Image (cartoon, rainbow, N blue to C red; front, side, top):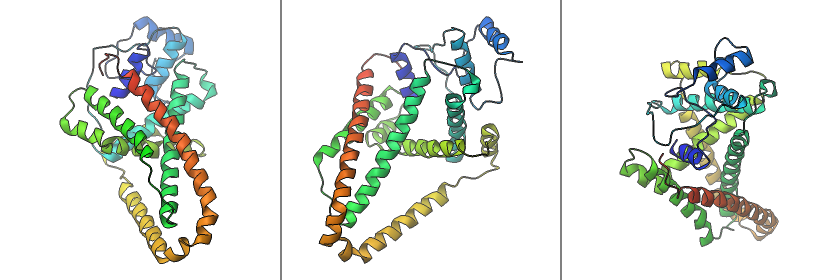
Length: 296
């Protein structure tokens, strides 16, 4: 949230979503949305992101949608991983629906920014999956070599998240420490990557899910999280792969296997290097923007 607010302020203070917690609307602005779109009310409950849809409709009618540089409203967060995931699913699903649904006929200058966010999720996902696959293959075939240049993106990420943690209101020392060690940011990113994958898979599914109902059911305890099953599955896969690597180590480390895999392994590391450079440039730009004296 702090990163989002700082980014909006650096780019003029215009927002693509006016939150429902504490937003001041001009009555005539809301009435214009109702009249032009022939609605019963300004908010449409058939959208998973009714506040974002309203914001886009206001911008289409040339109303300014700005955030305050100083006023803040603090609201409670979800109480568990499961309820948080369902909330994120609803938000991400609604955002993707707005981005891809041409029937809505709502245009906003923030649309490309949201598409960039989707591409960034895809980039982060590809980098991490590619790194895990290459690392496992390199270790299994005894072709892993460490280079200190790989520490650069890690340091950049640590600096960026430390600055964001310090700029976050009411932060605690443990928040800054976890941010600097990349523990909390990486966990948060993986949760978002899981949400990203689930939302886009659902997008291509024939059955549309009710985001509001899923979130309410999660908050009431009517549904349970599959986190435990997922972690257990990952652990079992890791154990099986480790066992197979140990069992067939002599074959995997043989010269013939190494020579066969080496070209693909090198191509993979080169591709990963280019993708990491792109991600590092994005982090450098974000660190540069944080020099401005804006408050989260």
